[in-house]
View 1 (cartoon, rainbow, N blue to C red):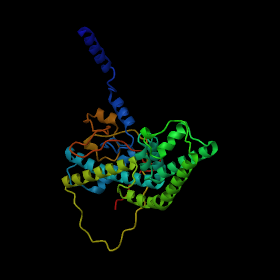
View 2: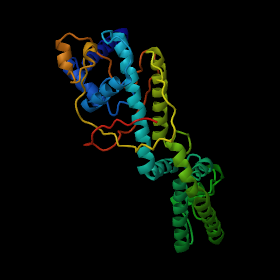
View 3: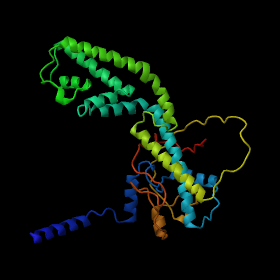
View 4: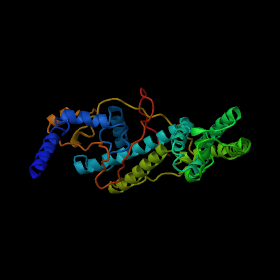
Length: 340
């Protein structure tokens, strides 16, 4: 028995040695490139060329009074500048999600919630009523069941169970899966429920959506999708990171005259999804305008740079885990939005 266990252990160790992943620097770089989708969840050092240019422009604008020959100081500056890019990216993506995908994203979440209605019909049915999209789904299902009952004078099988689900009836309180005998009473019940849901939808939920969108634009948690919650979390963490690093680097607001009039609104641009390979460079060359490929960095004996690895957190700073969608469509230059 012990010999058999020992042979199994040896076999497992041998198999593990065959699955250690890429070993060359080029292979490791390619693997990291495959894993990076948007740069919001990690440390963001692995950047495509367009975003590198944006980071370097921000570095110049920030004007941190540091020794740029000191690697630690430059690393702090890297993290600070990247935090500003992440803040803007989160706000741009939130704007796109609210203005272009609000109804679609909420409809998807309503359908995902509706798929769970059998597990806890009373609670799920009420949760669906909280959104215009969920309420529309409830109305559609009731309409269809009414059509079935008017045509066949009964409900059976899945239609019967769905009727119980929509009424919030617990499984233990349901009758046999045969038919509903008092069709006229059930029809009247369903029609009254549809009338109630339509009034709720038109009088309350639809007018409320504009207010919910406005609150979501500023990051207030009101009827948020999962994606919007992630973006708010990434933005909050990036703001906290920026404030801490600004204090470490000695950055302060520059004094100047107070505003005499309100500033005009800044239009929200799109941020591109770029496809250039992942590149980085040694700390000494971080301020050079041209990117340095990983192969060149390794050839020059530069130290390995930190990467945007899944679940990796910045050392001593807040990081973030998880994922979100890519920003917008490709083939557009990366903007440099001004924050107000």
